Length: 565
Image (cartoon, rainbow, N blue to C red; front, side, top):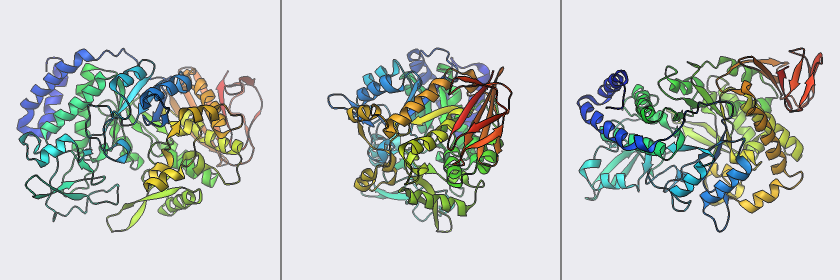
């Protein structure tokens, strides 16, 4: 490993030995080959994360236009509506796939031809940073790797996890109400039971295999060579399986991520790893490791359901208590803050924060807002809410709300997310004020489709220009907030924050970075509130004026960003 520093080489060798024993020399040799192959293809400049980093989350085909590939249309949208305030685009899996809206991949190295080409990806990269998905816990049963396994090809025999159908797997943590072991027939007609954490079409890779470790490393280095600045590890908590354990967050899983980080940073120190683990908060942030050796960012799964909870209760006590508890292991890591995504709003992150009764109350709230609820299987055979499936604007709104009130509630929650330490991730349907797609759920039978609507470019463009339309109101205000954030160093993702509440209905974040101080106040009460000023003289970043009042007034479902003069 000529390119790796001697000290790091010893650490890598030691970690590989603990995972793979006497295969370590073979692994080191193949790591060397991959580094030599991909190092010349990486040309990132030093670009540390700062307040200008904001990420748009979208499918490659969310916005469509006749005569252009989906990725070309996405690029058109990015250039007109995303830049410059949103400088990065997370294109959800754009590879060939068979199910799960892209998360059952057949080939990690190709672009889905229905979306476009690698040339289209390169065009987007000219103006926008990129975030790719590493969907490496599992892949499609139709993939060449799995089909080669079923054919008995020698090189693929330990790529997947075959288990005797009588094996007791009751301890395994399940994110789905589906079978863990599914039968597949090999080319001789023999039945093999294969580990499938998420669905029958998504067969889990076997990370106990050194060959799998190397193949996935190549996927990561390939993505880096294709200008991915951020790499998102999908469902990474389930990576390593040991029968007799719960098979989630195992020490070996953390070791694999740490190894990939050490090796990938050799050819590009400005690749950022983001782990996606929809689990209780303390388990989630364990993926920061010691603050230097594992994830650079961790999805902040607890924020979204707590914002919905605060809106439902018109009370911020729980939100404040949780925010105050956030402790990161170093000033080199931060949260990836988001409120909505292609998935629903996970409620597992609320465990030990609110009661099961209150989680069920959130589920009932979602149903009353015309959303859906997804459930998971428990060890005792019961089921409990796993995910709230509802567009974020709709889950916050009451039926009688007009567009101005709906937009105000939405932007209140988004302004919290934008103001918190970390990097904001903004789902495209949140940015442009979309609502529940009932037709998508009805046609597919898939609850998550409620927030995955496909839109035409011309229709979106027209609505964004229509006075008083929900899209125009939400989008215009959202972009105003982002324009402020990206110009103020006090929003640096690694800056400090303190949290407190007034009258249990106003959430306050005090942000500090270098000499700058910001008071961000958010009123969830539904009525105007006056509080004693926290500073004598401040500048209102949103209204662009100086304030020296003894009291600050915050209107219903409104917020203030006040910076010390």
